Image (spheres, rainbow, N blue to C red):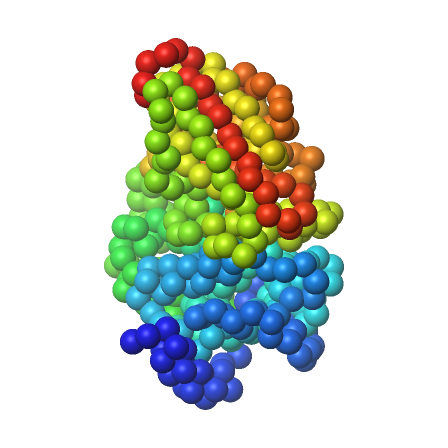
Length: 386
C-alpha cells in the first residue's frame, strides 16, 4: 500500500476511533483548546507549530520514524494521523496544565520538542490498546520506547509502583522495569498486563491482576527475578537512540564534511528555549582504542557523545569533553546537552581528548538556519589504521 493510500485509509477510520477515545496521558488536558493549525503533514503526523522558524526535514523524518518504530515494536498500527501541536516553550502549552513538557488525548498531542518522542509513544499506545493504564505502566512504557538509554534504579521499584503521580526518578525506574518485562516475557504478555493495570486501580490489584496473573509468579518472585537478572543499563531503542553505522577512517584520520541544510532530511533543527534556533547533523565514528585523540572542527561547533554499544552492567566514564548517552541525554529531546553554549568543541581550536573504545556520535551544528558546511577531523594517537 502506498503512503498516500495508507494515509487516506487511516484518516477515514480515524474519525470514528478518535470520537470515542478519551485515554489521557502524561499530563491530562484540562481544557478544550483547539489544536494549532496544520502546517506540515507526513505519513503519520499532522503538525502545527506556534513558532515562525521552519521545521527541518530531518525533524519531520525523525518523528515519523518514531511512530513507525513504536508501531513495529508493539505490533500495532494507528488508524489515523496523530495531530501534533508543537510549542517552542513548555510554558506556552495550551490545553495542558502548566508547567509540563507535554500531554496527549487520543490522537491529539501537545508538546515542546523535548517531550515529543515520549508523547508520540503515548499516542500510538493509547490509540491502539485503548487502555487508560496506571502511570507506572503508561509512563514506564513511554520512557522505555522514547529512545534514551535506561539506567536501573532497582531499589526504587516498590516505591514507584505505589505512586499515582510519578516523579522523574519514578519515570526512569518504571521505564527500566517495563523494558525488562518486554525483553524477558514478550509483547503479548506485556499487553495483557498493561490492559489489567487501569488508571486508579489500587496498588494491590495491579500487583495481583496485572503482574501476578499475567506472569504466573508472585510479585516478590517477579521483583527478585528482575533485580537479579536485568542489566544495569539498557541501550536506547529506535530513531532517537544514540549510535548509527560509523563512517570510515582513512588511515589514522577520521575526517568528513557535512552539509547542514534544513530542507534536507539529514539536518535537524533545535527548537528549545533559550536557543534562537540552531541546525545540527549527526554522524557516527568507531573509536578503536584508548588514547589521546586530536579533534578539530571547521565552519561550526561540535559535540561528541559516547554511546552504549549494548545492554550492560558496567560503563566506562569517557572523561572530560565527552557526553555520555547513558547519563547526559535525558530532557533535551535527542540532543544530549543544554544550550548552544554547552556545545563542546568550538571551531578553529585544536582539542586533545582522551577517548575509550566504542561507538560515538559526532554532532555538528551552527546557529541560525542558513545552509552551512561543517567539517570535523579526528586523528588517532598513532599512525596505524584503526
